[in-house]
Image (cartoon, rainbow, N blue to C red; front, side, top):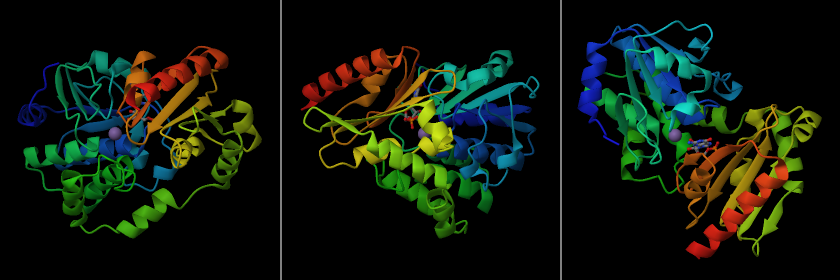
Length: 324
Ligand code: 5GP
Ligand code: MN
């Protein structure tokens, strides 16, 4: 894949107008933060811009500035330039892929090492903590002065992708970017409360149910939890309520590799994986058509539960044996 330098991306943005910024489906904090951040940067530059996402906005992020500006692929018209953020492959745009295909210019800004460079211009920093950190660098390359609200969104994505500055992607660069963004003056403590201590009770009830279903394999080095639609309906849980369960599995002292399998409404299975020290979960995810990072990756399985379970456990056991 050819990686276009940030200066080239900045030049293309300066020369363009009429943008759509698109994050991946089921957007997480980093996807939403980089989308909102880049959107505000474009507005600051007096560009016409929209944000389009093929998933509904998780309510937990609705407090963010401009969160209600997200449109759906059905209502968004054709745009000259489409910029994807935090999106490792074109499929992860979901229905917004139509807009991407219709654009005159496509730009892919990301931080997933597995990104296949699916756009006309690609800037992928596989070693960077978050897409928000890349967007912050882009703002510098554009010479755009940020405001407090834009800084808040970018900080939020760095914070969530680094697990509140605790994962292995926390480094001098991510902390420096976060510290610089903090200088714009937003309330960091309030932001933390809004993102991490403001859950509906359904999330807690689902967590209790999930922990009861925990299965440990390979002397406790692999932890696995399945959640079905029935489980979710019984506690009135949403997909967002499932977020964070896989990290709870990884918190167990014996666990190296955590697997969370969630049944979606259409019957497909969303597999999320995390590892602590050595297991490469991106390699497992890629085997099944997904991707991600060495310590956090996922994919969607269209096999039935038993086959999905058998194949992912088999791959996890091999990965554990390899790295051990
Ligand atoms: P999560 O488990 O939180 O859904 O995702 C963890 C990481 O894996 C994220 O960085 C995400 O982008 C990546 N990931 C999750 N699901 C998929 C998928 O279906 N395809 C790809 N390419 N990456 C995924
Ligand atoms: Mn990310």
